[in-house]
Picture 1 (tube, rainbow, N blue to C red):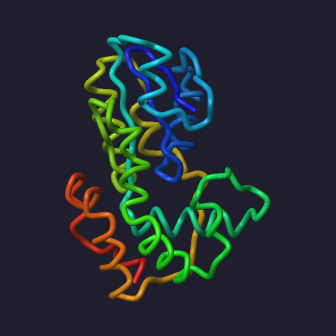
Picture 2 (tube, one colour):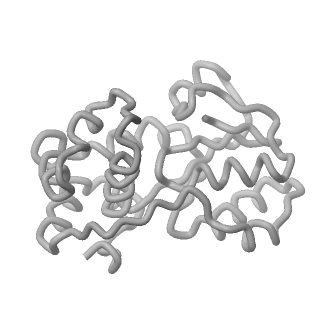
Length: 193
Protein backbone atom coordinates (compact mmCIF):
# COMPACT_ATOMS: atom_id res chain seq x y z
CA UNK A 1 0.00 0.00 0.00
CA UNK A 2 1.07 3.57 -0.40
CA UNK A 3 1.94 5.36 2.81
CA UNK A 4 1.42 9.09 3.19
CA UNK A 5 3.69 10.89 5.62
CA UNK A 6 4.06 14.63 6.14
CA UNK A 7 4.87 16.08 2.72
CA UNK A 8 5.33 12.78 0.90
CA UNK A 9 3.73 9.59 -0.38
CA UNK A 10 5.72 6.36 -0.47
CA UNK A 11 4.77 3.85 -3.19
CA UNK A 12 5.58 0.24 -2.28
CA UNK A 13 6.87 -1.84 -5.19
CA UNK A 14 6.88 -5.49 -4.07
CA UNK A 15 10.26 -7.02 -3.14
CA UNK A 16 12.14 -3.70 -2.89
CA UNK A 17 12.26 -3.19 0.89
CA UNK A 18 8.86 -1.55 1.12
CA UNK A 19 7.60 -3.59 4.07
CA UNK A 20 10.59 -2.42 6.10
CA UNK A 21 9.96 1.21 5.12
CA UNK A 22 6.23 0.97 5.85
CA UNK A 23 6.95 -0.56 9.27
CA UNK A 24 9.54 2.13 10.01
CA UNK A 25 6.94 4.83 9.27
CA UNK A 26 4.32 3.05 11.39
CA UNK A 27 6.64 2.48 14.34
CA UNK A 28 7.87 6.09 14.16
CA UNK A 29 4.28 7.43 14.16
CA UNK A 30 4.89 9.18 10.85
CA UNK A 31 1.91 7.75 8.94
CA UNK A 32 -0.75 10.29 7.96
CA UNK A 33 -2.75 7.64 6.09
CA UNK A 34 -2.33 4.38 4.21
CA UNK A 35 -3.78 4.18 0.72
CA UNK A 36 -5.26 0.96 -0.67
CA UNK A 37 -4.82 -1.31 -2.59
CA UNK A 38 -1.68 -2.90 -1.22
CA UNK A 39 0.65 -2.06 -4.12
CA UNK A 40 -0.98 1.08 -5.47
CA UNK A 41 1.09 2.72 -8.22
CA UNK A 42 1.78 6.30 -9.27
CA UNK A 43 -0.90 6.40 -11.93
CA UNK A 44 -3.61 5.41 -9.44
CA UNK A 45 -2.26 7.89 -6.87
CA UNK A 46 -2.63 10.60 -9.51
CA UNK A 47 -6.29 9.66 -10.00
CA UNK A 48 -7.00 9.50 -6.26
CA UNK A 49 -5.03 12.56 -5.16
CA UNK A 50 -5.27 14.58 -8.39
CA UNK A 51 -2.67 17.33 -8.09
CA UNK A 52 -0.65 16.77 -4.96
CA UNK A 53 2.29 18.81 -3.76
CA UNK A 54 3.54 15.80 -1.83
CA UNK A 55 6.84 14.31 -2.91
CA UNK A 56 6.05 10.88 -4.34
CA UNK A 57 8.87 8.39 -3.90
CA UNK A 58 9.58 4.69 -4.24
CA UNK A 59 12.40 2.16 -4.20
CA UNK A 60 13.64 -0.14 -6.98
CA UNK A 61 15.87 -3.21 -6.99
CA UNK A 62 18.35 -4.88 -9.35
CA UNK A 63 16.37 -7.14 -11.72
CA UNK A 64 18.55 -10.18 -11.00
CA UNK A 65 17.86 -10.03 -7.26
CA UNK A 66 14.22 -8.93 -7.73
CA UNK A 67 13.28 -11.93 -9.89
CA UNK A 68 15.10 -14.35 -7.58
CA UNK A 69 13.42 -12.89 -4.49
CA UNK A 70 9.98 -12.85 -6.14
CA UNK A 71 10.32 -16.48 -7.28
CA UNK A 72 11.53 -17.58 -3.82
CA UNK A 73 8.69 -15.71 -2.07
CA UNK A 74 6.15 -17.57 -4.19
CA UNK A 75 7.88 -20.91 -3.52
CA UNK A 76 7.65 -20.26 0.22
CA UNK A 77 3.90 -19.61 -0.03
CA UNK A 78 2.39 -21.59 -2.91
CA UNK A 79 -1.13 -20.44 -2.02
CA UNK A 80 -0.30 -16.76 -2.63
CA UNK A 81 -0.94 -16.02 -6.29
CA UNK A 82 -1.98 -12.48 -7.17
CA UNK A 83 -3.35 -13.34 -10.60
CA UNK A 84 -0.62 -11.53 -12.51
CA UNK A 85 0.96 -13.14 -15.57
CA UNK A 86 4.19 -13.79 -13.69
CA UNK A 87 2.30 -15.85 -11.12
CA UNK A 88 1.17 -18.27 -13.84
CA UNK A 89 4.79 -19.33 -14.41
CA UNK A 90 6.26 -18.97 -10.91
CA UNK A 91 5.92 -22.68 -10.11
CA UNK A 92 8.45 -23.57 -12.80
CA UNK A 93 12.01 -24.41 -11.72
CA UNK A 94 13.97 -21.17 -11.22
CA UNK A 95 16.04 -21.24 -14.43
CA UNK A 96 12.95 -22.17 -16.47
CA UNK A 97 10.97 -19.36 -14.82
CA UNK A 98 13.66 -16.87 -15.86
CA UNK A 99 13.89 -18.28 -19.40
CA UNK A 100 10.09 -18.02 -19.74
CA UNK A 101 10.09 -14.39 -18.60
CA UNK A 102 12.82 -13.55 -21.12
CA UNK A 103 11.07 -15.39 -23.96
CA UNK A 104 7.42 -14.50 -23.32
CA UNK A 105 7.55 -11.11 -21.63
CA UNK A 106 10.92 -9.40 -22.12
CA UNK A 107 11.08 -6.23 -20.06
CA UNK A 108 8.33 -7.44 -17.71
CA UNK A 109 9.89 -5.78 -14.66
CA UNK A 110 10.72 -2.59 -16.57
CA UNK A 111 7.06 -2.27 -17.53
CA UNK A 112 5.93 -3.12 -14.00
CA UNK A 113 8.25 -0.49 -12.47
CA UNK A 114 7.13 2.19 -14.93
CA UNK A 115 3.64 2.51 -13.43
CA UNK A 116 5.28 3.23 -10.07
CA UNK A 117 8.24 5.41 -11.02
CA UNK A 118 6.51 7.54 -13.65
CA UNK A 119 5.09 9.91 -10.99
CA UNK A 120 8.03 9.78 -8.58
CA UNK A 121 10.37 12.67 -7.95
CA UNK A 122 12.66 10.57 -5.76
CA UNK A 123 13.68 6.96 -6.33
CA UNK A 124 15.82 5.02 -3.89
CA UNK A 125 17.49 1.66 -4.35
CA UNK A 126 16.86 -1.40 -2.20
CA UNK A 127 20.62 -2.00 -2.24
CA UNK A 128 21.13 1.34 -0.40
CA UNK A 129 17.80 1.31 1.44
CA UNK A 130 18.82 2.96 4.70
CA UNK A 131 21.06 5.61 3.17
CA UNK A 132 18.57 6.50 0.42
CA UNK A 133 15.61 6.69 2.83
CA UNK A 134 17.67 8.94 5.10
CA UNK A 135 18.43 11.25 2.16
CA UNK A 136 14.77 11.42 1.12
CA UNK A 137 13.63 12.25 4.66
CA UNK A 138 16.36 14.90 4.98
CA UNK A 139 15.13 16.42 1.73
CA UNK A 140 11.63 16.65 3.20
CA UNK A 141 12.93 18.49 6.27
CA UNK A 142 10.57 16.69 8.60
CA UNK A 143 11.41 15.27 12.02
CA UNK A 144 12.34 11.58 11.97
CA UNK A 145 14.37 9.10 13.97
CA UNK A 146 17.57 8.91 11.93
CA UNK A 147 19.30 6.50 14.29
CA UNK A 148 16.44 4.02 13.94
CA UNK A 149 16.90 3.91 10.17
CA UNK A 150 20.44 2.64 10.61
CA UNK A 151 19.83 0.33 13.59
CA UNK A 152 16.43 -1.16 12.77
CA UNK A 153 16.73 -4.87 11.88
CA UNK A 154 15.93 -6.09 8.40
CA UNK A 155 12.48 -7.59 7.88
CA UNK A 156 10.67 -9.67 5.28
CA UNK A 157 14.00 -10.94 3.95
CA UNK A 158 13.63 -14.06 1.84
CA UNK A 159 16.89 -15.87 1.26
CA UNK A 160 17.46 -18.06 -1.75
CA UNK A 161 20.14 -20.48 -2.80
CA UNK A 162 19.10 -20.26 -6.46
CA UNK A 163 21.83 -19.02 -8.79
CA UNK A 164 21.93 -17.73 -12.35
CA UNK A 165 24.42 -18.99 -14.85
CA UNK A 166 26.52 -16.11 -16.14
CA UNK A 167 24.85 -16.43 -19.55
CA UNK A 168 21.32 -16.44 -18.09
CA UNK A 169 22.12 -13.40 -15.95
CA UNK A 170 23.31 -11.50 -19.04
CA UNK A 171 20.20 -12.53 -21.00
CA UNK A 172 17.90 -11.30 -18.24
CA UNK A 173 19.83 -8.04 -17.92
CA UNK A 174 19.51 -7.51 -21.67
CA UNK A 175 15.78 -8.23 -21.40
CA UNK A 176 15.55 -5.58 -18.65
CA UNK A 177 17.94 -3.12 -20.29
CA UNK A 178 15.63 -0.19 -19.54
CA UNK A 179 15.99 -0.71 -15.78
CA UNK A 180 19.66 -1.59 -16.09
CA UNK A 181 20.46 1.72 -17.78
CA UNK A 182 17.92 3.97 -16.05
CA UNK A 183 18.93 2.97 -12.52
CA UNK A 184 22.61 2.26 -13.23
CA UNK A 185 22.49 -1.47 -12.56
CA UNK A 186 25.40 -2.14 -14.90
CA UNK A 187 26.77 -5.00 -12.81
CA UNK A 188 25.93 -8.55 -11.77
CA UNK A 189 25.55 -8.92 -7.98
CA UNK A 190 28.02 -11.59 -6.80
CA UNK A 191 25.47 -13.39 -4.65
CA UNK A 192 23.32 -14.38 -7.65
CA UNK A 193 26.02 -16.17 -9.70
